[in-house]
Length: 454
Image (tube, rainbow, N blue to C red; front, side, top):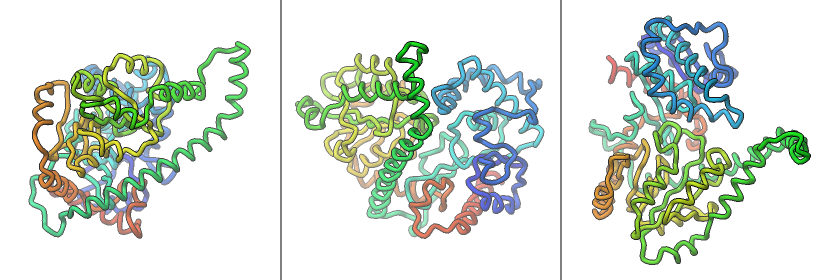
């Protein structure tokens, strides 16, 4: 099959994939600064297609464009603005969208692409358009999503399949034990903490090097009213001031709650895959809080914890104005460990975060607003606009059976493929061997093709 690869993590894996009998690699898109490719994904995001790619509104492409635009432009914009504060205006974003669409459409046609392989779920903008073109043209797809468990990742044909329990019977030797689930969860939590600390430190250093002197000059020009501009520094300071005014200690909130029950909602760091593709409409996290606030009435309070890495992105003045209209919503100090809040909570609400998984391990129910990998487990209610208050109450009034939850988790984890496709997770694997990993991932792809497409 003529195959397009998107986001191949390294050259060794690319070589292994080219050895697969059923695959003819016809086009590659990844970070070409690491190894050669047909398109550099980073350049594609920054500059769109260069002049050597044909961007033409052919008859086939154009007849589908308007519906494609109406269906996917909004999601594309939410993903693409990850580029930063100085993003293009909406009209130029529309032009970017059209160029991506026509450019990819022509590539797929000219290369006669029959299979697309994505090494991550599409969440940057251009990759979303490519994925949706594959669906439009009924092209076979393989998508991968690294799990929080060492050396395990999900392989699916469509994003909606993430988190669906497998129908096949699993061998006993492949099944996880309760102790292993708890061990891996704790190990991931430690990795998340270390990565967060490293990222915060790195962000601080980069920001100082790149922005300090520039901001010094800009701030002086603003002060003397030579220019008017809200710099990233100003916006971040305002955000931190706004969030600080909202936050209370956990003890203060516990006193406020009295006889009410607690729904805990830890906010996701944005922009991230967890909301930009897995969140759907709930990429706007305030929709979640508005829904929970309406449901809570006098029986519940919603305890919200902001992500400690978050800054002013998606958290500007009108974000806080919307918050003021919500009843029974309280922000807890973001430095408090989420585990302590989960212990106090009756229910955890999340879009697609690991907090829901942690709640399940503590025999607590979870309301999932996005496309989470554990959404089909016992003890989870998948939320959408059609779920009524009555359905929520019915769900909350039924006792959770932890044995069913654990069995569902075991089934999901055991259905994963073995290997690492997101190299940010290779540190979870003891004595990680790149060559063995690439060999295993290539075998997994071959087996997936045989089981699903042959």
